[in-house]
Picture 1: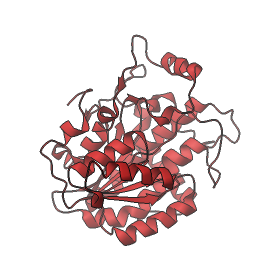
Picture 2: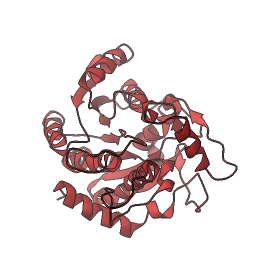
Picture 3: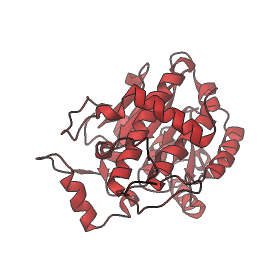
Picture 4: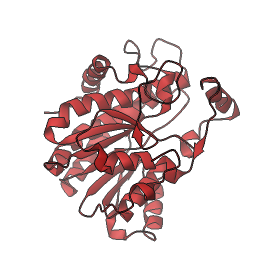
Length: 315
């Protein structure tokens, strides 16, 4: 397994028949490829996205490649906690057992904005919305767990976590000046910290969690970026590092590997990249995971804050 590994290579010889997978951000980019590959391997896939027309168009297109009965679409707006609660209630009713939850959706480098409940848009969408969804779906994940076969949660983070840690004193930029890359870094750090805290709580209940860096892929995630942003992102790279882009099939491979690899059974709370467990990174490293994103104390602090924000906790 390496940089070039694709989803089909990860799933070669793997049968997901009888498994239910839930994928957020399923109407574009990596989400589409993640859905396609999981369904092609036999999984029943619940596709979640905000734009129902776009989501249904993708579902119909994928039905030409995989059996249509394996694909289901549900509206989910990660920037609205009330709508997430409504969507989760319907999902739990229709799918009381969920084997795989892939929190793939995200936004990047957005202008300053806030979700319906007032969270900074990147933190609110990338972390807070996924936190609420995951906690609400936890009973279905636990119901799917069997001895020797854990249910899995995959949270898409990014090497962008190196751009910013959690600012617990002002996470929503109410007092400090807004910087879209710092905000993106904070949200991607939050994805890893959430993974650490979630795995610590659910590992004894048969659910394991992983954070994933998919790599750089030319998808709609970069729709807010212009040429100046690309230059700024390149300047953020360590000296001597060249940004290499993956295809969607290569970019989704680590998510699919995290969700299905037998080698990861019994593991959790890890940050993965290029279909392997990432090493701890130094302050100037681009590859690997920075210590501020895996700090257990920060993970617990973020969990407590997320419970306060959403009003839900694992029971």
